[in-house]
Image (tube, rainbow, N blue to C red; front, side, top):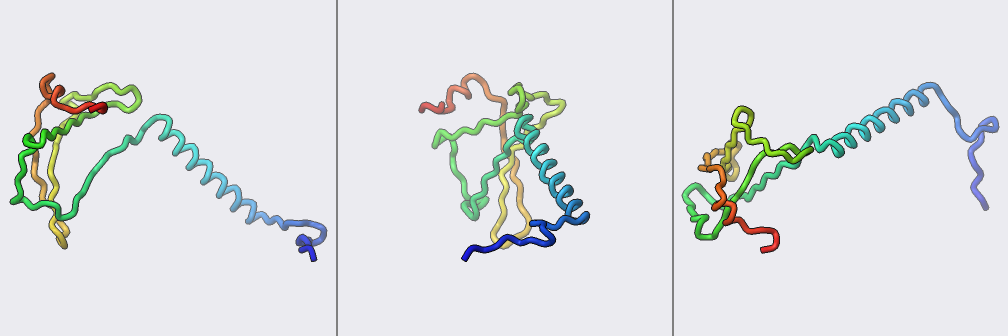
Length: 131
């Protein structure tokens, strides 16, 4: 036995002014999100920032020699649109830190790390994608 469609005075739907306003409001919200998110994707306005946390992996008493493992980290600031390096000391200050947060504590301890601008010899120590 087929299910019959809902009809009220010959109409399949009943429209109200409140329902119409709600539909328009919802449409505006959805379209505004599409426009904003699309603009962010196209202009690359919010570049990815990575942070890695390893819970209770080490304490401040642990010491390792990163040179022993040939471990190097390179970082910089660049414009995501034209990929132009932004190392102007008037606007950019590098502050590499090691964050230590002990288990069941609400505050972190920050340890500043030494750094220097890479030389050609430093760049030669980095592994390439093909290595």
